[in-house]
Image (cartoon, rainbow, N blue to C red; front, side, top):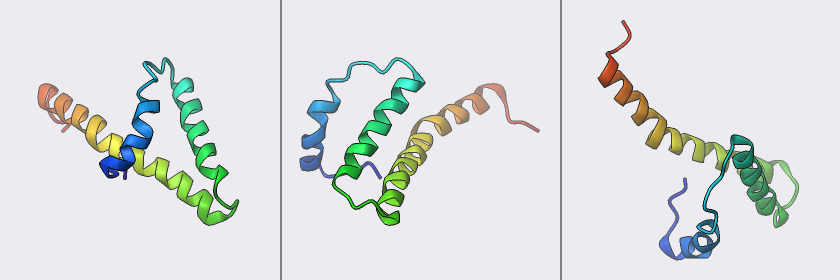
Length: 84
């Protein structure tokens, strides 16, 4: 999950926070892919490392969905009524 200790966050946040805007889905995909490649630079090219990389992104997707998409859907359901 993306909840690392604050001392570890200090290593990454200054550089990540320099990015002011990611304009398109393609740009976002590019950035995520580049981060995955950076992660793999220091790992052996084997299944477990590749699996860790892919599933780290999947876990972030799950967390993003839980914190944003699900809340948005709950709001729409509240405002518009449930599907019967």
